[in-house]
Every structure is written in C-alpha cells, then in structure tokens.
Length: 41
Image (cartoon, rainbow, N blue to C red):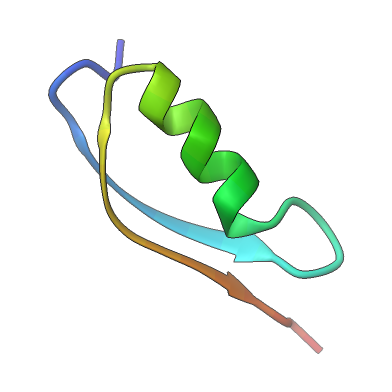
C-alpha cells in the first residue's frame, strides 16, 4: 500500500515517537523524507 510513497512523520514525545513510526513505515516500503518527535504542550 505504501510502496514507492514518500512520507513525512511527526511523532509525539508522550505517544508514539518518530523513530518507532519510521521503522514501521520503512518495512511497508515507503521512503521517509523527514522524521521528528515533537512535544505538544
């Protein structure tokens, strides 16, 4: 489903961090162009 797609990831510090989402997205075949973990207060 994500094969060949480009993805931007914004993770949440108290939720799911960016690197965790990034690993899942990579295994789905997408290219991660930007990944970060933010703190939403």
